[in-house]
Image (cartoon, rainbow, N blue to C red; front, side):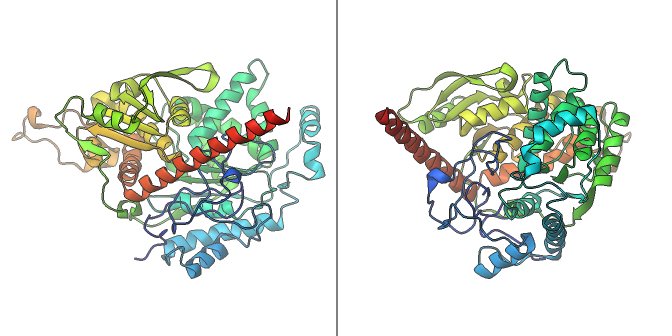
Length: 500
């Protein structure tokens, strides 16, 4: 079966075309970087009237009309244009079907833009804060007339690429935000901290979010944390009441979200709300196209006997810079201690980063400060270190989202690391123990965990891609863009100081 592939890089996100409004996380045709000072994005999740996605991602496409609004016709039309231009290869029915759903949503949004209050510069939005205060006195529902879209399917099937293709076509003046689900929830928890003492802080947070971004595009929607599970229903009930429209990607169908989680009965109303406010669409491909990247480049080392092998490699990356301990600030005043850091590279023994009570906030803070991580002695995962496995999965997700580089030593290949992690159905399909098989020969460390069992496939896929030449090439270009941006910022600051 044919598949839409970004040339030489599988289903990674498509190249972008408009200043500050489109994000590239994939390798399309090699293009020179131009107007770099105009193409670095603010990390802020909700940044006023700016458009754009997460930081550390950049445009690799030339644009002679950087300050002008590019004419857009929707994701399916743009997809066909890129195929005709040779930027994409022709795709299969699964991807075409998904693009038709995204085009349908795009057309509905364009037609109902005023009713959905998408224009951030409209008179309605100028009175946004007073409207919010008035709604506290006279509560009223303004549910969007357009339903969102929930895309789910296996790993490496192009969900993120397709959602980004959709997002890239949306007008810059719309109240929209594209963000990873981890990052979104971190912001929610941070805002809840700020509004402690309010009678219903979730209502306040939902009001802030919907005033800033009425169209939310959340990538990798997954629920593994009980705290997230318990607030999602009320949070999104408020968001949908405020008119929010959700576009999400996930490896799990809505009915399988937070499967087997603590107090899941309290989470079930959210699933019902999600299915009511979103059209659910499955991408039916079973092939992981991330594995179709080029040969390994040697940043993932299996069972090396030398105790200081990774440290030597780390020092090579540090170059002439002296490695020393660092302290990284993360959300809500927390700080992460980095054993060694130099030249944008951080070194950690595995237990320091994944055996301690750390989470996505810490890993986002780490990626904000360092573009490369040297992680020493990643173990085989099983029942005895299931918590560390969860943290490692989160770490890889955050690094992948930020296009960070991972150099590590491990006890096995990516597949071998997770071989003992299985879902309930996988465990049930295994042959039961018989009298001829002793307990000693059983896999006593088998970990039966549905969430981790599903997440492992994504992690294996991403580790494979992160070790490819295409990914590392893109990482190198990202570093060069940041270097030039830093030089430009220094120059601009000097010019301002000279004027004074």
